Image: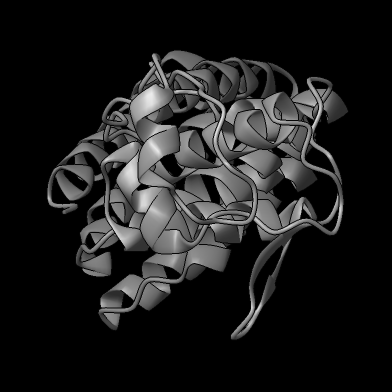
Length: 253
């Protein structure tokens, strides 16, 4: 858990100030490390009353604060910059743009969660969608899902995998299920939360080719109205995805 302590503004760690602080920052957990650091930076800004336009500590100083690498701090600052909370000025440092508060959007709150919990959320919601689609999809809707699977299969035969086609398969499934709220949540989780984290990991993208047959089996089972088989195949996709994620995360420095 990250604890907060007051620090001098402006990014310079004075030795005397550090010695006078009673509460110290501890090492940050590895899972979603950059988002946890981003959360701690938000808390530092809030607790120290730092206003828009004021400068934050340097990357080196923050790396020392959190006992982590400058790369991890840089990733955290990128998250905050994307959220509009900070502005990175080349050669000058990082400046607060808007004061963070505790009433962030659902996406911000999701980013702070454990990626395994996010993956479990996605899996549960997708499983429910599979059951509904298998029971009530029209012939036209089933064909649309099959077409996505065929595109994935065609690319796989050429040794090619495309994220956008995989994403379209899952979004088509959720849209057919008809729950707009669930569709929006999964879209955010897949692209903006887990998707962002995937971008930081080092792994061979060809591992996703192994999921292509399962996507086709999901689509064919739904076409037959076999919800149980479709749910089992979707679970295999999600299990594979989680295994790859855990393995890739374990290789992070």
